[in-house]
Image (cartoon, rainbow, N blue to C red):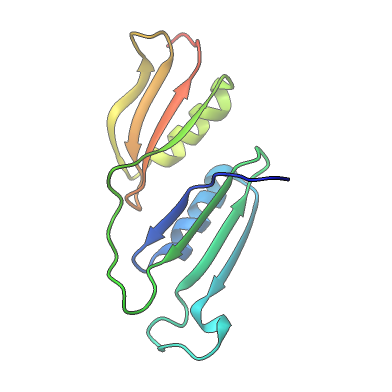
Length: 137
């Protein structure tokens, strides 16, 4: 298969809920492993996610985990996860779910470069960009 570049998201104790949310948004197969699955762990962290991986029907791989015990969680900054393509219905569906209960900084609408584009931060604090190529508003 070669190499791939995948987003790996960090959470402060709600990785299970976030990864299940992304499965609801994108569909696919979700695998979750907890710190407790790999031997003795601080009881406070035993159910936290050590590694989560979502493989979607569209070919996306999204990974995520809770911050390991003893480390400080730093919420997302300086990046966004970008979704783009020409399947307007699929991308609008992702937008609706990702932006629900989150915050929208740029509404999904026609932009000066001719695409429909929007920016939002989902309810878990992950920033998303959605770009639909060459679509009318």
